[in-house]
Image 1 (cartoon, rainbow, N blue to C red):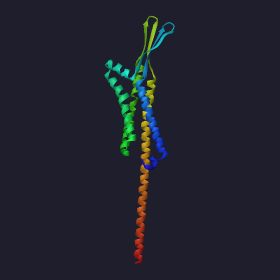
Image 2: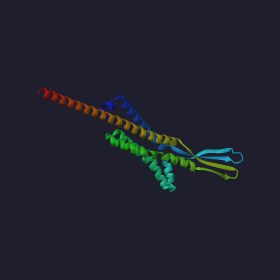
Image 3: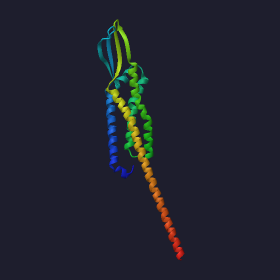
Length: 221
């Protein structure tokens, strides 16, 4: 925000940290959207002894397969909410943050962009809530035949944990950038006020000096 601060090592440390955080977020987000987010597990037991004779994962869900599954089930609203909350909004906020941090603009506009991103970033948790809901509803215990019980559950996979990390990282990143902006703006305002005050004091001293010289000249005359 000013040349002295921009040329300091502190400025470059901040830029390196922000760049590393953004790169980490982008990599984790791509990873979360391409790997398994949930695995459906089937366990078979003998009713009398509770002895397990079957324990296998029968279905693996990625983000794309979840959307496809609900779309084919005619759950169009849920499919659209997943696309909006998991893909479009986080990608939009990330692009928004990069523009606010890298593109030259007025401090007031940048501050408003960070403020908007701080409010919208909370929506990034929609994918976690959806995955938790999926795991809660996909739980079934039933007697398949006499003497045999089956249990069907949905369990989190690496993609679910990556989604949780990226959602938390997004919120932390937004508030950290906003805090850095507010701190730099406050310092700039204080510095400008100090310069203006010094300038006014200098002009006042010069005015008093000129008035004193004029009075001395008049008295001599």
